[in-house]
Length: 257
Image (cartoon, rainbow, N blue to C red; front, side):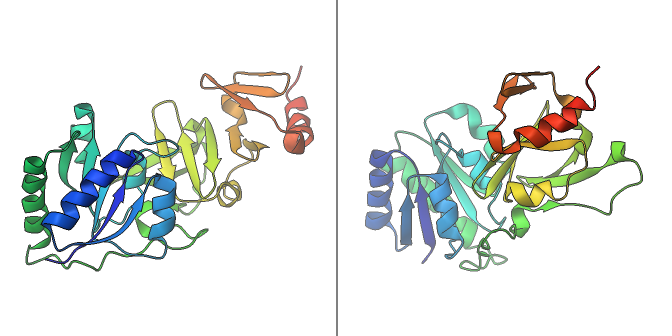
C-alpha cells in the first residue's frame, strides 16, 4: 500500500525514529517532516497527504489544535508521551494513539491498523483535500456566520472542533487572539482554534468588540478592568498597543461615570 504520510513533531529524535520505522518497514511515501504545527499547516496548503503522525505537545499550536483544522479524510496517528489525551484524541479521525518511546513492535501494530483503515472498500487514499491559501478557511475549520438574528444577544456562529460544530454565542466570547493565519476564540469554557485571520473576523463582529492590539480583539462587555496600557478579561492580561489605544479609550470614555 502506497500512502502519502507526514510526520509532525518538535522532537528531532522522535522524528528520526518514526522516519526509520516508516522507511524500513513500509512502502509509504514520507513526503515531509515538520517540527512545528504551523510549519505543517503551511505545507498542507500546497500538498495533500493521507496520513499524519502527529505529536500532541508542541509549542504555538498543539497537535489537538492542528487536528481540528484538518480535513476529516486525513487519517491521524497521535504520538505523545502522555496517555491522558487518548480519549480526547478519538474525537478526530484517529487511527491509533502511540505512546513514546515508540517500539518497533508497537509500530507494527499501528501499521496493521493503518493499512486496514485505508484498505476499506469505502476509502479512497490520496484524495485528501488540500488546505486553501488564507484568507479563505478550509471546509474542515471554517468560521461561518449565519444570517444575523434579530437580537444581538442571540448572535452566534459555529466553530469546527474535531467532528463537531461547536455553537458559540457572541456575547460569551471574552476575546479573540490572533497568530498569523489562525485565531483562538476564547470563552469562559472554550478555547477553539479557527483558520481565519483576525482582520477577517473583526469585520464580522458587533460594536461590543474592540481591537486593542494587532493580536487581540476584546469583548468590551466582558472586560473586568483597564489599568495603564492593559485590559483584564477572563483572568488574562492583554496589552493595549499605541496603534489602537486612542480609538479604544474614546469608546471606553463613553461609559465612564
